[in-house]
Each structure stands twice: as structure tokens, then as C-alpha cells.
Image 1 (cartoon, rainbow, N blue to C red):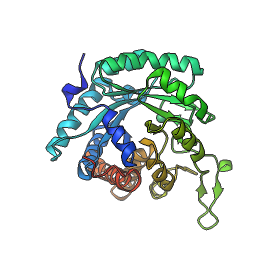
Image 2 (cartoon, rainbow, N blue to C red):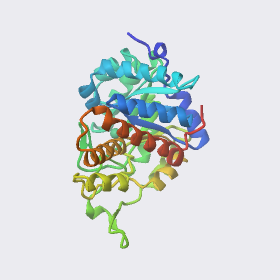
Image 3 (cartoon, helix red, strand yellow):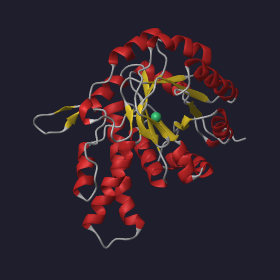
Length: 332
Ligand SMILES: [Zn+2]
């Protein structure tokens, strides 16, 4: 049993309370590789932002859970080395699918876990979530739960259709489970293809797809039921068109990739939404930089040559999100 406190990590409790009060949101960036971890820490330190580094089931399979845990420990030490005296870094399990997975993460040094029982019935979701909360709280680990279903594909989480969260269910759910934050479904979606052409309108000037707006009426209804309760948005990448264009220009093929407009996320960050998950944008930033590098310098074969611009491009994206979208800068 390793406590996250020994690793210098923090849970989300104080972080979320401050974010809800201050009208901003904490970035939750997924990571799988050393370059992503370095870019996240550099961006958080330079902007003086708290940050959630999250690990999906796919990341655990790709990188190995033990390595990821040591990388998070390394992230804390790296932040200090970069000059941050008191880094606020959370190691979070994204979409935990069972009590056992959550427990193994808690036991190995995670400071926060998500238990995703959204595909179960309301009663079964409550039962599973409460089981995880009871164990997590014994170790001062915070728990994110989910009500409502997001469409799209994220690692091994996928659903064809979204089901918006029902505001009338949130009080009973939060009270009975004791969860610390709640992921809701108001129209965000996993992956780089969040909406079909049919769901979008077309901008007559650029010909680009314009996605449907988020259901802010549902968010407001939930906030009224649970005033000040930390709300989480998954699937909140914006799928920047310049990165998609770069990928397509240099041999990629991402037709009609579309995300959530940053203006919508900025509005959400000012509400009770205090954690915004961003994964696809990091993948796009990395891929765009690598494709461009290979096209311009076909003779390069040292991974450091193409992973350096990839890391720089991700860092630029993380800083942009922190300052221009979430507003979590200058909070340390
Ligand atoms: Zn998610």
C-alpha cells in the first residue's frame, strides 16, 4: 500500500472547492507517455496552475500501471525542479470500470479515482459508486462518479448514443453515494469525431462543420439542485482545426473531425464545472507536429528529433487551454 501523500500528490477536494468558488476549472489532461507528462508539468508550472494528470484503462494497458504511478511521482519532483515550490498535482484514474480497478489504483498511489457506473441502472450505479467511495474515503482519496451517458469513443469506453443527465436524479445520487464530484452529460462527447455531419450546421463562409451547442439549461438545473457541488465535463477537446489541417496537409486523413468550441467550454468553466477533460487535443497536437516534421525532414530517424517539436506543440496547447479556456492560471 502506497499513499499518494508520500508521493507529494494531492486529492481534488480543496482544488475543486477553490475552483467552484473562483469561477474557473481545473485541467484534466490524459497522459500515456513521458513527453505528454513533461509537457503537462511544464505548462502547469509556467502558468502556476493546479493540474489533474489522468490515466485511462488504455493508458494502463499501454504504459503499465506501475510505470504511470512512478511517472506521476516524477512529475511532482520535476515540477519542484522547475521552480514550483508547492505543486498541486492529482493522479486520477479515468473511467474506472470496477471496484477492483479503483482499489488497485488507490492502493498504488492514486489520489483520485473515477468509478464509471453510467452504463448500469440508476440503483446499480449508486451501489457500485458507494462501494468505491467507502473504500476511497478511508484513504482520503476523492471519487468522481458519472450520471448520464456520453456518446463517442475513448479508449475502451464507447457509446453510440448520449443520454443527458437527468437533473431530478442528482440529489439522490450524490447523497446516497457520497461522491466528491459528478461527471454529467450535456452534449460533450469522447474522441475527435464528436458529431456527425447531420448533427452539425455548416459555416457558409468556411464550409467547416459547426457543432450543436451544449445543454446549458441542464447544467443550470443541476447547479440549482446541488449548489456548489463540483461538476465534471468529459470529452471536452476542441479538435483545433489548424492541427487537423496540418495533419491532413502532411498525409493524414481526418475528415470532418469536430470538437467542442472553446467559447462553450469557457462559459462552462465559469459555472460549477470545475474539471474539464482534454485528451484528443493532445493527441492531435502530437500527431500534427510529428507529421509536419517527417514531411519536412524525411531523413530524420532519431525519435528525439520529432518528439521534441511534438512535446513543444502539446505544451503550447496545454498553456492555451489553461489560460484562455479554463482560467486556472495563477492559482498556486
Ligand atoms: Zn471520459
